[in-house]
Image (cartoon, rainbow, N blue to C red; front, side, top):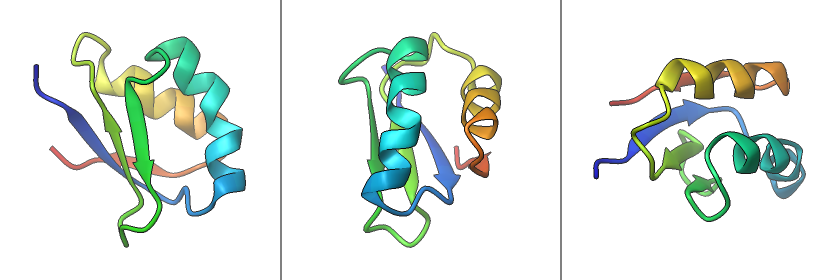
Length: 70
């Protein structure tokens, strides 16, 4: 299974907390990770059955920017 990666502006623990509930519902717990130490603030989703459009729209609704990296 190939991961989906996204560049975001989720840049701190508080920001991660704001999107956690949304990502857990859409993707599932322990199926995503946000690397806030990376300059691109990379969101990695370990599930390719969820469309990238669904993920992007969900993150945008929480107030963050997001774009596909792969």
